[in-house]
Image 1 (cartoon, rainbow, N blue to C red):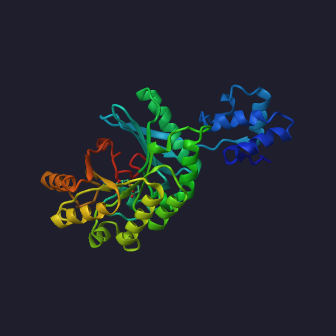
Image 2 (cartoon, helix red, strand yellow):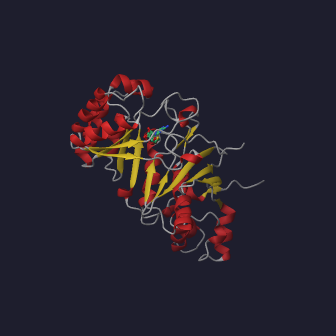
Image 3 (cartoon, rainbow, N blue to C red):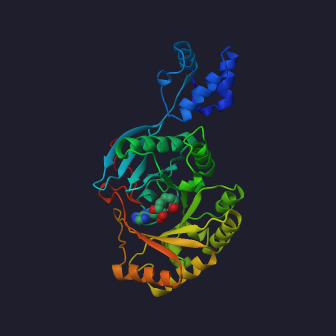
Length: 349
Ligand code: SAH
């Protein structure tokens, strides 16, 4: 009968060291294996070249290394790379590597599909199938770090949790992946270079503050008027803006970190002066800045981005109110890799 092997990546460093000790081998071999797995992202025992053949054989008979696989990828004319990432159970998520002159940013998925139903987002059409586990999240980052070195001659500089899914609905696994990303024995990245983007779940924002996380927080706001926000982000009726702003205030008081609001301006939805005024008022509650994002049209949607004059009046009014604001052009639009366009179009099966 075939022996069922345990995934070695479920073991802590101490457990791997103990495995070696229990086979009368030195525990530092366990440290080396841990570094191969987490610092170097190796998925094959035979590539662990500072282990003897005997040690490799011992590991192979007892363990397997489960990992994701980049099934397919597309490159945009602007350099953006969109990956179709195959998980152990054949589900596919997408992750995107976005290069600029100085940065390489990895946009990471946290769930297969999404349970929120934002009317403007392509991922919303995919039912939420399951949460990604911490390794699957971490592996996306390692894969894009390698791609960045290969294509752009530098490691990743930034990570954003803005791919498929709602990271605060998979908080535990996202946090444990981030802990490995910042661990000196993992990727040793600074948490200041990591941003988690949420649709705004008040109790989880409070939890992040209490947990004293060191990464940044972005909130997909899109409207500071409750009735408008509920129309485009229907779950917002459960998490009203009053609760959201209380949680954000708590976050700021605890972490001292300002918040970034992501905001798309649509024709006929949030293009009026009262929308701008509501946003100004909301921003003045807590130190924050606004990223106006270009709308990336999705199939079947009848929504259109507001004309440039409306965007300009947002920019003007926010600046006048001393609120830091930028308008971000999309990247990777030609390959459907831009915000809100991730919907497994690469998936062939
Ligand atoms: N669930 C998280 C992260 C995923 S969405 C969140 O809601 O923040 C990443 C960002 O893309 C969010 O700010 C989201 O509002 C935005 N987005 C979604 N669909 C979009 C679209 N079609 N065009 C532009 N931005 C979009």
